[in-house]
Each structure stands twice: as C-alpha cells, then as structure tokens.
Image (cartoon, rainbow, N blue to C red; front, side):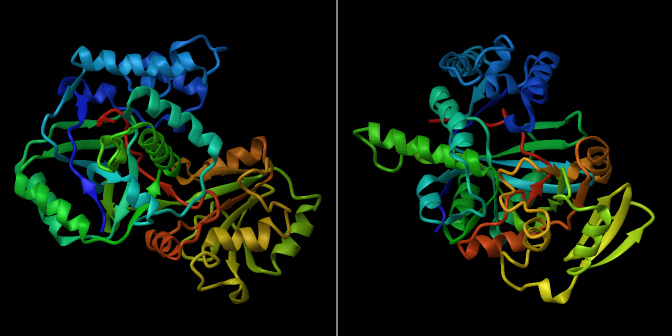
Amino acid sequence: MADVRAFAAYRPRKDIADRVAALPYDVYNREEARAEVEREPMSFLAIDRPETQFPEDHDMYAEDVYQKAHDMLWEKIENGIFIHDEKPCYYLYEQTMNGRVQTGIVACSSVDDYDNNVIKKHENTLAKKEADRIHHVDSCDAQTGPIFLCYRENDSIRKVINRVKAEDEPLYDFVTKDGIKSRVFIIDKDNEIETIAEAFKGMDSIYIADGHHRCASAVKVAKKRRAEDPDANGNKEYDFFLSVLFPDSELMIMDYNRVIKDLNGMSKEDFLQKISEKFDVQEEAGQVKPSQKCEIGMYLGNKWYRLNAHDDIKSDDAVEGLDVSVLQNHVLTPLLNISDPKNDPRIDFVGGIRGLSELEKRCDNDCVLAFAMYPTDIHELFAVADAGRLMPPKSTWFEPKLLSGLFIHTI
C-alpha cells in the first residue's frame, strides 16, 4: 500500500515560471552551471548549485555555500517569486518531447515506503554523492529536486488526468530552449484528490526511475530529523519527499552507451577475433543503432560493426539477461579487464540523448572503442526491482529530465 500524498507546494509565479525552471543540478559540471546562471539569473540552478554565487576557487561544499542556498530560496519566497498553495493538492506535470507526451502526478511519497520496499530501487547509491544533497535539503529546509518515480498504469488515475487536461487551464505552459514543452495543472477538487490517494494505496509497488541519490538523501534527512524531534510521529512533512509519478505506459528509456579508453593491450585484429567468439560481427557502412535485444553497435578504428550475441550468452534472468549485463559479462570484464565500471577510469558513459555521433567524437578524442546499446525496457527495470536485485551501473537514461524549481516541498 503506497502512501502518496497531496501537498501545498511553493511554486514560481506564472509570469516567470519558464525563467525559473531549470534542468537538474547534476546534469551540469561546475563551469556549465556558472555559465547557465550567468545567462539566466532567475534560474533555479542558482539555488541548486549555490557555488555559482562564489568565486570559482571557493570550496563548493563549504558551509557558507549551503547557507547561501537557504538564503536565496527563502528570500525569493519572501519577495513573491515563489507563491504558496495553502491547500494540499496534487499537480499534473506534462512533458512533450519529439511529439511523445508523458504526464506525471506531482506528490509527496513516503520515507517509510522507501524503507519497506514499497518504493523499489534498481541501483546502488554512493555515500559521497548523497552527502551534498543531504546538506542541501537540510540547510534549505526544503526538497527542490523531484524524484522520478513510475507505477503500473491505473484507470482511476488516468480518468482524473484526462479530465483535468481536457477541461482545466494550465498553471504553466512553456517550451524550454531544448524544445521540451512543459505544462502544469493543479488538482484541487476533493473528490479527485481522494481518488488519486486511494488508487496509490491500492499499489504494492512503485519504482524509482531516476534520482536514486536524491531519494536516498531525502530519506536520510528525514531520519536525522526524526532523531532530533521529540514529537516525531512518522507523519511530519520531512517524512515525505517530493516526487513525480508517471505511468509505465508513457515512459521511454533511452540507450546508455559506453566508451572505452584502450583495448587492454590487444590490437584491433586481436580484439575483433576475441569478440567474435561470443558475437556474430558484421562490419557496416554507417552508424549502427541497435534495433533489438542482444544487438550492439560497436565503433572501432573509424568503422561501425553490428554485434549479435550468440544464443549461449543470452539469458532469461532479470539481471543477466539485460543487454548491459551481456556486454559487461562477456566483453568488458573478460576481454577489457573492466570489472568495476562504476569506478574504472578506462570506461565512460554517454547518454543516448547525445546520439551516436558523440561516440564517434569521443573515439576521435580520448577513447578508442564505443558500444551503442539497445535501451533497457521499463518492464525489465520492474523485473529487476521486483526481484530485489540491482542493475549494472548506467543501465537506464530517461528523457526528458524533470525540471527543478517548479515545485518546492518545505520540510
């Protein structure tokens, strides 16, 4: 039974929402974040990445940096940049990318559901990456970056979504510079709020699609506050975290590709001979974008190859059957000696949104080999999470990303 609650959001005024909304903090490096905030001073990225307000050599994890995030957020609230919906509501967040529409319910999800595995994970987290967001949430007294969750399609929720989008005026309607259209609606009718809450209560599984580190950070802040609060009862604002929940029927996972720095001492010819023991290898005239499971595109020596896995290395296992696992288990580990892809400096990962030309570019610059993957399916993600297991690192790339700054949950 999932506890997914309405909440009273702080959100930007309608006339500036498009200027405030920002891509997630972790899609930018430090230089890019500074440039974006200079381009658009209203961007919420200034609060998500407060080191942009300090000299370039300032420690981005210093205490005064987090204090600056707090001060900027609450100053903007006091100045009316952000307004407050007094009544707990749900919100609809619709995104359109290349003609494909996905619509999520903006809500607050339960820390206890995370701990009890009602909210299921498919990826490990790193304490170092969590630490920054723990400090940010705790300092700001607010969650500013929503967690991307997904659920199996539900008729009751679908009917509410369809009614709201057909009859109500959006709170926001704008297109960002990357061409993604965003629309936001408020769901404030009591009967529809109850319908959504009851529908989620009927679900025994919700899944983290993207944002494992942000989610884990919100949970750890909640536990810290529970320990410090003599009146803790499991029902405080800090016991719930900002999330957007999408139905599985609308989500698309893009490929998450791999680039490799060297061939582990092998020549190109030796490597091709070794990989042909596990895959049918076909040289192609142009770029190879895989069209089915267990098919991989490979770029080596300025040439593209199509790899098709032999039957004996395919698997029906939830994890071992993933294309990224097939590559890891039969190429990266045994041939290239990359057994810890999360930490090995010889491998890097390229989101599918960058296209196959980015793989060629990387091989012209700092790499020698690239693999173009067939995307993981959303139901493969469900199967891994339901089995209580984990995917290899960098198995899924979701687009479009959820914008920060449109919804703030104060704790």
